[in-house]
Length: 495
Image (cartoon, rainbow, N blue to C red):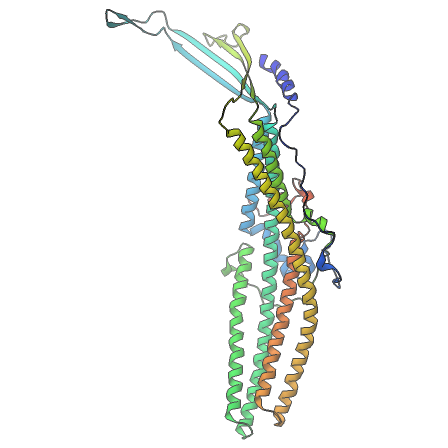
């Protein structure tokens, strides 16, 4: 058909469209230090990385945490929303790419008509004359094509922008995934600290109960005053109150973990268990790798690329649009024999349109696109600075808390020894009971402070892994092994 023959001409015309207006994208510079300041002079004793093909949380060597983290991909609703946003962005790329090719269509019509009635004015009055001629038939079956030739790269820049938006959405999905995983790990650590705090308070209540018994026995034989008994009872009551209060913290954390793994809190529970003693620290590498391994930074960089492409889209509006159209098919007065050579019809043409005056509209759109790009550059550089800040913060936290833990651990040992000595002295009648109370209160506070330091160290290690990207790499963006594609294929996931 004639239209088919004209397609090579249309293709050749498209090949002439070798230029795309607007700036080509080059990643702007960002402040990248040569080394992490807070890592200088401090090396973790046993830096640990996940085994090959293992997720980042495997460094904590906790099977319960491993099982919970695996449920994030399957059941977390926030993550599913982010994955749906990524699929939406990917569909927009396909939509933009469709503009590269002609739009093809089919139409068929059939009409029967006669000459229309005519109105003749005579002597100031209108006389309607009867229709003349015989009714006639008209039948058509046509194939149509229309192609917006991308002479100035408007379509290419649009596709470029949508592809960058898709990659940004994928990086945002990776960031949301990592955030959910880190939140779960942090809540899990806090819950286990609550378990250990409860164990500490259980032991404290038992110790205070023994002290009360000793005081009561001595009061019965007249060695001590009633005030010592009341003091011991007050101290025991305070410990029991803390013992009950920790239940609120644990229940709240258990509920938060349930929601993170996509379960109703009523259907979820975790048995008490001890907190791991080791504080794994991930190797930090060199600062420049952070630009590729932090998904938040990668998302900001891709948003910047998308904004850059939109400048070209805006500039293309200054140039004429060329649209090629073609029609081929058959037209005749009867259905019989309609698709025969004598009834063949075809047409091919082009239409060029250009705006001469728009009173500053296109100029304003270009200025808007450039301003949006400048904002994206600033956001990218701020994301880089924030990422380095997060790493430096956690390195400093881990370094300082390691030293603090060593001091506090020795303090707890000394406090426990002070309790043992003062209690023996009290039994011997050489010190007042207030001395015992003070020693026991100090020992409990020091033990709780030591637990708090352990909690802070583990949470800082989780935050460091999150700031370092958790093993994610920007090289996977847009590839089958990317985080978004992996999530979409997760068993139990329903896109």
